[in-house]
Amino acid sequence: MKIILRILFFFFIITGTCNLFAQENYFTVLAAQGKISLLKNGKSNWIDIKTGDKINPGEKLKVGNNEYAGLVYSSGISIELKKEGVYDFDRLKNSIKNNYKSSNRKFTEYVINELTKKAKDSEDMKSMGAVVRKRTNYIEIGIPSPSLVIDSNIVFKWYPYSTSSNYIFKLLNNNDVTLFMKELTDTTLDCPIDLFHLNKGKNYKWIVFVYNNSGISSDTNYIMIPAAGKLEAIRDSINELNSIFGKDTTAITQIIYASFYQNNQLNIEALNAYGKALQLAPDVDVYKKMFANFLLKMKLTRMINYNGTGG
Image 1 (cartoon, rainbow, N blue to C red):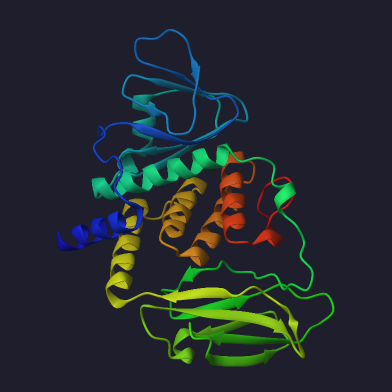
Image 2 (image 1 turned 135 degrees about the vertical axis):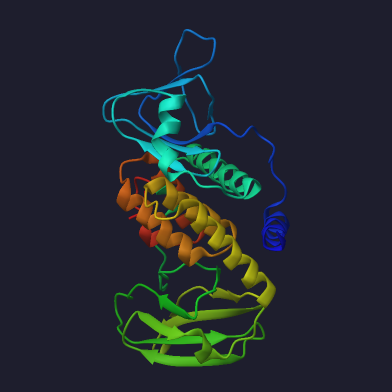
């Protein structure tokens, strides 16, 4: 019980409160590709669904040929509909009954509400070609900044600069004191966090520049080392997610993980989860836009093509 209360307190501090008192027996629409229709209780006409809509007992969902719907049940279990047909509520619920597991109700509501918000924001995004511009004398990074680091190892990445294969990597504290520096001919640095002797609860800067030409460099980037209490709360929350989804490896589950990671500044993990989702469902526009929106916020413009998708 104490662990659950700590998890909830942690979420409220970071994101604020959300509506946690909805009914317990419904599906939430998180993604729809194509024209997916819903027949509401007491109605005779089918209506188009949108992100955030609820499917309640007695209602029906219609999926056409080559269409897709991603739903999450109120317990947190996800379901993807890829086959043409009409699905009434009982059919949907029966399809997940063997995977049904109990979970922290408020935790599940938090995840669904946050993901729904991200999906809606992504639906409103305009063409991204105008905002993705190439910069001169600039080394593009390959991991998000800032990123909260909870693992014992980190891989710093950047893209090669056109006229050089020699780089200097520097890690600094917030007083701009250099803590670590290394010359590299590669564009990755894979190392244990303990190598840097960093203090918990502190932020650190890192930068890459061309050897013998510091005028060609990356932006100043940041990693954050959580304090012990915060690290424990994050790990408890990840364990809670794992207990809800278990071995579920659908695209929609990866999107849920990505949303959770992003909200808690675990942006390296979010990048990986978004990437897995796109591998599993490469044609779902809302997932592509959510990923692209994330990449823009992280200034990972090299990963965005002019169709507004990650790649």
